[in-house]
Structures are given as structure tokens and as C-alpha cells.
Length: 208
Image (cartoon, rainbow, N blue to C red):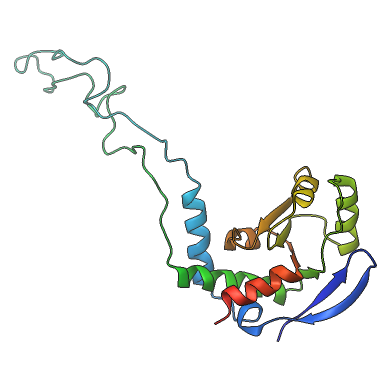
């Protein structure tokens, strides 16, 4: 079973915590990770790309020259796709690129991502973040205690207002709730920090 470090930030006491092998110790399925990342990135596409076909390009209402007798190729409009300034054939139109993954695939991908971070030693458990008031400086000091500097993902069951406000001005630090956690968030981070309550909730949510 995977074992990660449990840190009490207030006292800097450190111990080892064993996690559920079915959630944090599975063999990562790279195809599920690929599908989850593709779904996340597709859902974030704006889909506003657009081109004009020959029917909506301005101009071109008159036939450039008569059909026969000029020695030139026949043409019906200056907005033909064969000419510069003409329409686009089968060009992109605004559309929704998002698609859904079934729950089994999403849970399997999240298990794979968490197991990947836990297996690489890039996961830390904390008993909590002692923040009485929002303070970016104090929160930065707490991250330094944990040895987390870049691309940090913090996961709590329900992040407190103090935690969210303290972290939002730090570049490369993201805060997520357990309910809003996505596989892409885990893979995009270098260091994952879980609260004890979040780890327990993930084991309950993703346990087989």
C-alpha cells in the first residue's frame, strides 16, 4: 500500500500515512489519462472559429464574363473558392467541441493520476492549513515548510475562504475541492497537497 508523508504545519511534526491501495496505488492506465485530458481540453475550447462559404462572401453577384467566346475558363462568380477572396470549402463553423466521459472512465482516470503522483513521491498530506485570516505571505511560508514551490495543487473537501484568498495571488498554485477535482488538475501539477479529510473523501468516492 502507498505511504505518504503527513505533515502538521503548525508544529512541523511529520509522520507516515498509509493510503488506500485501490485509489492511490493502482497501475496507471495511460489510455484513461489520455481520454480525460482530451475531454478536459476539448471542453475548454471556445469553438468560435468560423469561415465564409461562397454563399455569404460579399460581392460576386454578377457573372464576370460571358459563358462562351472569350477563350477563358467559364466562371459564374468572383467569389468562387478557386479564386483569391472567394469562399472557403467545408471550412470550420462555430460548434461545441465538448464531449462526456462516463463515470467509470472518469473515476479510473482520477485513480490513475493520483496513483502516479503518490508513486512518484509528489504527494503530501496535511492535517490542515492554520489560516485565521487571508494572508498570502503566511500561506507562502506554509508551502515552503512543505517544500512545494511550483505547480502546486491543493485539495480540500471544501476549501475555506481564507485558503482560497491566500492562494489566489500565488502563481502556479491551484486550490480545488474534492467534488471539483479533475484528472487534468492532478497531471498539470508537480506537487499535490491533500488534507486528511480530502484523502478520506477520495478513498470513499473512488474506492472500488
